[in-house]
Image 1: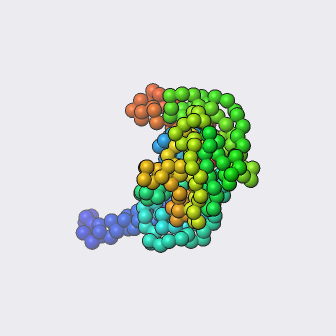
Image 2 (image 1 turned 90 degrees about the horizontal axis):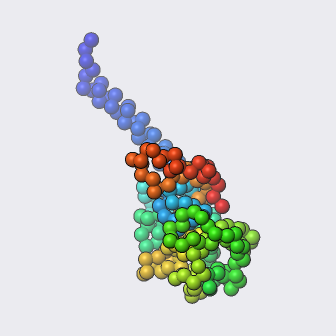
Image 3 (image 1 turned 120 degrees about the vertical axis):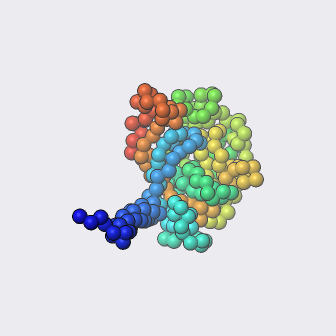
Length: 252
């Protein structure tokens, strides 16, 4: 039997390449329009998110901007297509204003026009203190040397979430009043004393106010979670590395 000609082989390669491109295109569409996975590399959102969590963000939750594509294929435009306003208390994935190539995840605390301030470790929104309820010592890894305290904080409207505090006298536990500009949002980490967030200005290496164009999606659930302290090469410890209790857990 004659071997396939060059043109026959070329045609076969073309069919395979077409299938690969279609598959890649489908994945890009899904990750742009519907949802995209993200890795949590730091403890800034403990106890809600742990270092090593793999979360899924719903892209459709707030509409679409130039930052919606995972590989920056969207045209350069301002505003949002099919835009929907986020809600206070959402856990939001966004592009860092000072470096849009970097993705952060924090909790949305301040809406446009809000007055946000920290006084003595307590959160004030529009001059009213956000109630918090003491739970007790937090025994998980919060990225610090001391044992933090776990609280349940209540935002205006009644939405509750857990936070941890090392103390009420840390560096960013007393701030000036931040007035959130139009079309911007104020983000904070739930690990209040170990979070680079909107309390810190861009000039100081912080987040500052987050423009609505920079919102990527709403964090919905934890796909899986793995303790990064256990090396992949340490096969004998794999059973301790994965956190089955966090599998497909909803993010609140």
